[in-house]
Every structure is written in structure tokens, then in C-alpha cells.
Amino acid sequence: MTKARYPAFLSTNDEPHYRVRCPIHGFIHFSPNERRIIDHPIYRRLRHVRQLALTEYLYPGANHTRFEHSLGVMEVATRAFDSLAAKHGDRMEATFQQVAGMEENTMQKARQFLRIAALLHDVGHAAFSHAAEDVVQKTAKHEALSVEVIKSPYHLGTLLKEKYGQECVEFVPLLIESADLPPQLRLLRDLISSQMDADRTDYLLRDAYHCGVEYGKFDYLRMIESMDVSENDLGGLDLALHRNGIHAFEAMVLARYQMNTQVYYHRVRRIYDQYLIRYHQALSAQGLEFNNDFILANNDVTMMARIMEDAKDPTTETGKWAARIVNRNHHREVFSTPVTESQLLITKAKSVAKELLFQYNKTEQMFDLAKGNIHKLLRREDSEGDWVELKLTGTGNERLVTEDSQVLKTIPRAFFCARIFADAGNLSPTLLQEMRETARQKWQSIQ
Image (cartoon, rainbow, N blue to C red; front, top):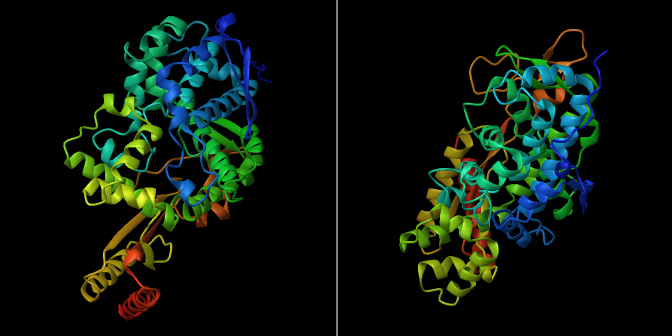
């Protein structure tokens, strides 16, 4: 029997002397050294970056932030690490020790670096999180800025090196985003970013709680206890799932599907994301440069103050979209496709949009194509694609989790939904209904 490996700490200042209450996880514990990071201005900025942008316009309780989410990811990742270490501590230590810089205090470093990576994985998010990311961070996503913040001596690099050594500054960025991650450390990244990770575990539970919906809830404690490891071909360990936890994992994937379709891609949420995108595009057209300094100097509060000021003059391009946001004066949906895996419906939807633009050319319209990614689990019948293997253990011979789960065979990996919105402020209820009927008839006429 493998000797259980219980939590150990690099120093007395790494012992969890502090705690904070969390509505999802109860208490989240952290150390004096971690408190230095949490109290740093770079991290404090996340207190004012909401997790779900303007979703509060739809679900009024959705005012939670990246700050509390990141604390939650650290807590979940730690619980998962401790669960695995209790079962496979010797194997984990022997694997991690193969990496230069991890020869001594191996498990202590692995656990601590995992916690720091979980805590800082979202530190590079711009205001409004993902909503306008394609405009504000179009050349490099938030993970790249998170890595820069961790490495840069002008941000957190000096503090991390002082508290945890040079290895922390080297390894933590690899756990967040890098193709150069040693295969022996892949298990640590899996705990933060994979098909069964701490990040999606926390945000599903937290988003569901604050939105007041039941969709995102699943037995995550059972899933954590059922996490296992499997050897890969590169000399490392991959995160796996014991068969006892397959129902909890199925529930998590189903929760992700339901939260995507019912919350993250809800029509009202999508239209306000569009306004944020167009507002930031207008700022860019005015000459504003969305560089890293601008991103780190701003948050939802400062940007909303700017939006509210711009909304005073809706005759400008920035003011037009700002006024939509401030006054909650949004376009109304006149057509939407079913939520589907098929991209063929998108072509039909574009034909409907073209017809509406032709018949109602004096009415402002917006076409929105939403694509939600649910999972990337490899199925036995797959031949090509960027699919991810998740092994099922405890069955006598390791096999893919999708081979034992009828649920995972049927939940789509991604879905598409196309919508057409029209300016409600300039539409009478009769005209709005007429547009909807025209769209319906055009849709039915397309073979």
C-alpha cells in the first residue's frame, strides 16, 4: 500500500494562519506569504473585475468577482492535490523529482507552486473579463498577461522570488500557459486546466450560486475524492478518474452544458457582450491603445465610470453603445436558431438575416453567432482532432472515460446558436412581431 503523503509546508510563513469565508467552499485558508500576494495591488485589482461582466443585467446577483473565484480555484486545486497525494504521494514525488529544481522539498514545492498558479491564473484579465477580450487582448489572451505579471520584477516577480525562490518564477508560468512544461509536471497543470480541473469546478459552482440557478451544481467533493493518476508516454502522470466518480464527473460536464446554454450564452447576456465589444472597438478607433499597462490600470469600476460619462453624448460612436449599456436599452431578439452542434444551420441563419435586412432596412439589426465549447474528451471512434484523453481507473484495465459513460457519449462537445436582434426602441410591438414572423417563414422556406 502506498504511504499517504499529507500536506507539508516550505516554511512556517507558508502555513495557513489566515482564513476567509466563502459561500461555496466554507473557509479558504492561506498563509502569511500568500497574503502578501493577495494584498498586492496587482491582485487586489481583481476585486473590481466581475466574473461575468454585465450578466447582472440579467441575473442581478451576478456581481461576484475574479478575486473570489481565484481564491476558490486555489482551494479546489489544493484539495485535489492533497487527495491525490494521500493515495499516490510516492509516485508523484518520484515523478516531480525528475525536473531540475524540484529535487529537494519536492512535494512542498509542487503543492505551493500549484497554489500560486491557481491563485494567479486570472490576474491578467482585463475589465469585464471575457466579454471584450477579443478586442482588448486580441494579440494575446489574458493567460499571457498573467504569465508576464508573474515573471516581471515590476509586478509580482520580485515578491514571488523573495518568498518562494527562482523556481517559483520559472515553474508557475509553465503551469498556466506554456508548451515547454516538463511532462513530469503535467499533473499539476491538469489540476488547474483540463477537462476536470479546479478552474471550471469553482466557476460552475460559484456562477450558479450567484446567478441563483441550479444548473451548475454537482457533487464536486465526490469528484475530487475520485481523482486518480495514470502514467503517460512521456514519463509523467496525467489526471485520471476512478470509476467511483464517473457520475459526479458526468454531472459536471452536464452542468457546463446547461450553464453555457442557459447563462453564459443567454440572449440578453450576449447582446450586452456585443455592446461592450463595440464600445471598446469605438475607443480603439479613437486612438486608445489597449496595452498591458492600460489593462492593469483599469477594472470594471473605472471602465464603467468611463462608459457612464460617454453615455451622456449618445451622438458619438462610443456614446451610442455606452448609452445602450447605461440605460439598459437593448435590441430585442427577433430570431434564433436551435442550440445545435451543426454548423449548417448558421448558413440558413445568415440567409434569414439577409432577408430581414432587405425587408426592414430602416431598422438597426445585429447578427450574433455564439459558439460554446463544452468538452474535448476523446472518444474511441475519433480519428483526428485536438481531443483529450481522460482515463478511467479501477476497472482492471485503464480505458477512456467515454467508453463507460453513455452520458458523455451524447453530450455535445460544442454548440452553435445564431441570433438576430433588432432595435426595440424604434420598433412598435406590431412591427417587432412582424419581423419575427418574417424570419420564421424565411427559415422554414430554406431547404
